[in-house]
Image 1 (cartoon, rainbow, N blue to C red):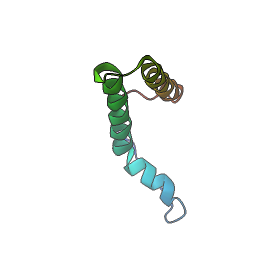
Image 2 (tube, one colour; image 1 turned 90 degrees about the vertical axis):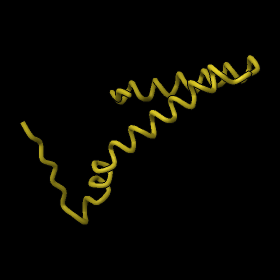
Image 3 (cartoon, rainbow, N blue to C red; image 1 turned 180 degrees about the horizontal axis):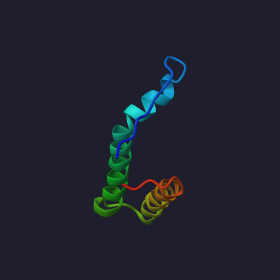
Image 4 (cartoon, one colour; image 1 turned 45 degrees about the horizontal axis):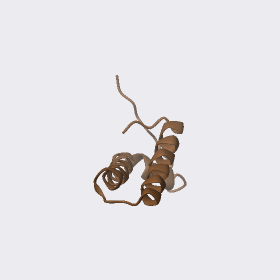
Length: 71
C-alpha cells in the first residue's frame, strides 16, 4: 500500500509545507505537553499556580483530542 500527495506549486505552497513538516509539528506539541506536565509535577507551585497550569494542561488535551491527534 502506498499514498502519494500531490501539490500544485506555488499555489499550494502552504499545504505542501504543512505536509512536509508534520513530524516537526507533532514533536513541538509533544514538547509542550511534556513541559506542562513537568511544571505541574516537579515545580513548587502555589495552589493558584498549580490550578492554572492544570487548567492549561487540560485545555491543551481538549484541543488535541478534538483534532484527533495522538501524541
